[in-house]
Image (cartoon, rainbow, N blue to C red):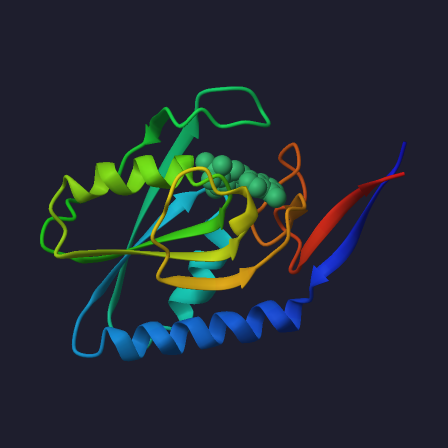
Length: 174
Ligand code: IMP
Ligand code: MG
């Protein structure tokens, strides 16, 4: 069986949209500093590209979470594998994620971060699969809404591969 990756969103489309998101955030946070929290590993490519396009002062921190449950279904019980290095108290925080799927992971993560008393807390995701939502998640900045397909690239993996693709693709097994 071989795998091919069909392009869903080209490198140019993704780059253009990230530029738009960066402009939106720069406008919304005018006069402030934004503290970006990158959710590893999937959020790392998007976070870097987004951060470069934000014109207000930016600070960065990283967090890594894993959800208990099998590979295909997250249980909503999330383990913090790597916590933030710095306090977020009184900061204007934006959590940067690759994709919101069922919403279980982010719903847990946002509740956890909210309890640490940031001044504000928003979510920015490159991709959103609204059809799959089980847990309500308030997303302020969305790159693209996509259909219920398994996608890779721009940080997203299939068995840890394809994260480095500069576009978003759909894995086809044939
Ligand atoms: P959920 O929102 O708790 O269901 O989990 C979201 C996580 O599942 C994301 O952060 C991804 O790591 C992973 N995920 C969901 N959909 C996809 C996909 O289409 N491709 C690759 N990873 C995905
Ligand atoms: Mg992720």
